[in-house]
Image (cartoon, rainbow, N blue to C red; front, side, top):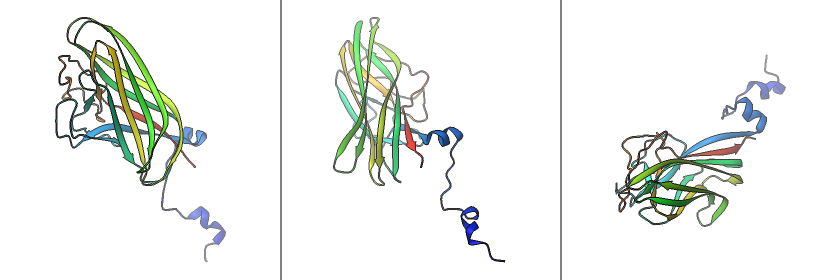
Length: 222
């Protein structure tokens, strides 16, 4: 006998299947982890020239795996990801950045790291949230490097349409005896084989724990 039309909505499957856990069901939000990465590098020196910086959901191996402010210079870099389907970012965004603070001499220094979450539609860049971390250090004399993991958070509510760009911007400035700062941007979190020096600086350091920079992005589940 033919199927009762009233039962169709219970017995047919849509084109898309979405898996959510219990916490996501209760809060109405899922957390998507994105990674900062570099591809298509044409220069292995730090800071690199001709490098493409990207934001990706995949744990790829970065080409070089680090980027830097350079020797005694400020830095402002963008990591972009084009949105493939409309999403609503809604909640606290948490960004974690592993870095090496490089110093040539003894004494105190302070460096400010600003992370901005931005919306880019191809013509207009809109700041959604700005998060600032200030770190002060006093280090012994000589050419040394201090490994740090920096985490900042901020609230974002914004709908990204298909074809628009989610942008994470990292800027850095310093005072005192800091010569440069080197960020880890390898989604695979390699601890060896990454650059630990900056052109113009004699400082060196060692990566510990992780070299993966991550963005925990809260996505509204309808």
